[in-house]
Amino acid sequence: MRPAHVTPSLAFATILAIGAVASAQPGKVAARARQHAPPPAPTVRPQSAAATAYLSGRQPLVGWHAASTRPVARDTSGRPLLVLTTLNRGETIEVPTTSDAGGFEAEDLDRVAHELRAATGDEHPVDPRTLALAYHIETHFGVPELRVVSGYRVPKPGSHSNHGKGRAIDIIVPGVADEEVARFVREMGFVGVGVYPTSQFVHVDVRPRSYFWVDFSGPHMKNRERGILGDLAARSDAAATARGQPSIEPFGVGTDVDAALRARGVAGTGAPQVEDDEDDDG
Image 1 (tube, rainbow, N blue to C red):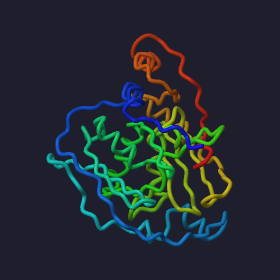
Image 2 (cartoon, one colour; image 1 turned 45 degrees about the vertical axis):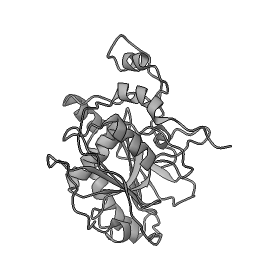
Image 3 (cartoon, helix red, strand yellow; image 1 turned 90 degrees about the vertical axis):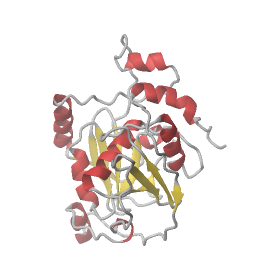
Image 4 (cartoon, helix red, strand yellow; image 1 turned 180 degrees about the horizontal axis):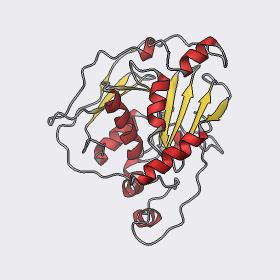
C-alpha cells in the first residue's frame, strides 16, 4: 500500500510556525532538468588504505565529486541562490533566499519539497533550517550547487530517520572532499553529520543534540553505523548555545500553529515530544 501523500501547503503551517521566516523575494527561478551518467560504485572497507585516505580528506575528486562547471547563480541583488541538483533524477532547482543566512518563502519551500521528493513520488515539507544548513555549506565552500543523493524518504515502520521528517539531506559538494565538508558542519551545533565512505556522500541534518557517525554500508545494505567524536558534538552544541543560536526542538507532527508556537516557548509552555538522537538509515 502506498504511504499517504503529505500535502506541503497544510503541513507547512506547523513548520513555518516553528522555524520558517518567509518574506518577499523577487525573481523566482524555475527548476531545470539536467542529465547525468551514474558513477561507478567504489568499494571501501574499514581500515583499508582507501578508508584511511577518505577519512583524512584525501578523497579522489572524480565522478560526482568533480568540481562543477556551472557558474554561481545569483539573485538581482547579487546574493547566491541555493542550487540543488538531484542525482537520481538529474533535476536542478535554484532557490532565492531572504537573507545571507538563508530564509525561504513558502512557495519556494513547496518547490523544494517537490524537488527532494522520495523515490516513490511522495513529498514532505522540508524544515527551512535544513535548507539554511545546506545554504551555509554551499556559500562557505563557494560552490555553484550541491548534489543531492537523497532528500525525503518515506519512513519505514519504527524508523526514526530524519529523512522522514524533512530534516535531513545526503549531499556531495562538488570539488570538496566529504571529510572536509563533515569537519565544517560538525562545528555548527545541533546537527547530525554522517560520512559514508563506501557510497561516498555526507549526511547532514538538524536535531536537538549533535551526533556524528561513520557508516561503511553501501546501497541497500544493513547499516554499519559507528558513532564518533562525542566530545566534539557536545562542545559544538555548547558553543552554539553560547553564541545565542537557538536549539532545535524535538520533532512533532501537527497542524496546530498555536500549539507549535507554545512548544517553542514563543507563547506559554509546551511539552515537546522526545526525538531519537540517532539517524537509523543514513
